[in-house]
Image (cartoon, rainbow, N blue to C red):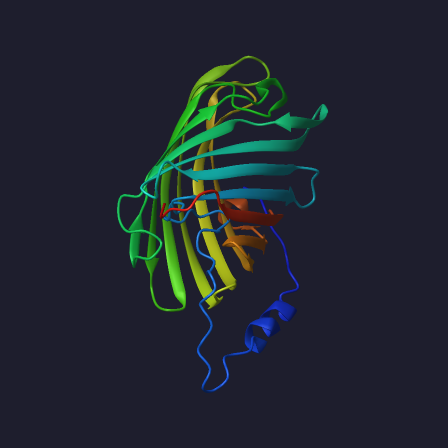
Length: 282
């Protein structure tokens, strides 16, 4: 497991409490769009609104190593909030016995259905199905070497005016995964995650995410082996709302390995842009 870091949040926290309120007798300003679907490791159950595309970039650096992963994700409502298509393209640099391998990883093609609720509901459920395409070079440990499928069940619950929780359950199956020596095997993984988000301000949130996964991989002997990874990730996210319903969200987190992953630390950076591409009312 990877990602994260420490952040100078004091000035941002001060800004939250120093935001001016409307003077007596003056109408309250229109509420600014709040941060909602911008978590880091735990998936929220909110599909994109009709007419809005979200572009997400992340960067993870594992401390004490030269390993890093950059991802580019786009989420599109097709054609409305009930149905969402997205893709994730990873680029990575991984250190190994023969040096550092840099290149494209396995691309993920996703479909998500808004089964229950939406971004305005107290409870939302949005199951996802993913096709994993073996675009990474498995001989350099940049990809699995086989096609895969993944299913995920995100559930989001509004606990109060200030707190929201997100729960994830997921499973992955890689068919005929291949290692650098040409060994092949089917691999199965499963994961569970939980997050708690404090809505300190519509444009500033603090979140804690926990994730545990049991993963199969091809060992040095060419046979399928299994390991368990677990992380606890504190972080924050902050939004800038621009004219035209254009929202930019930045975030930082410090994932810390716990239990079987104790001693692992990462730095995680997040940048998202949401931009309308047509009017949902027309």
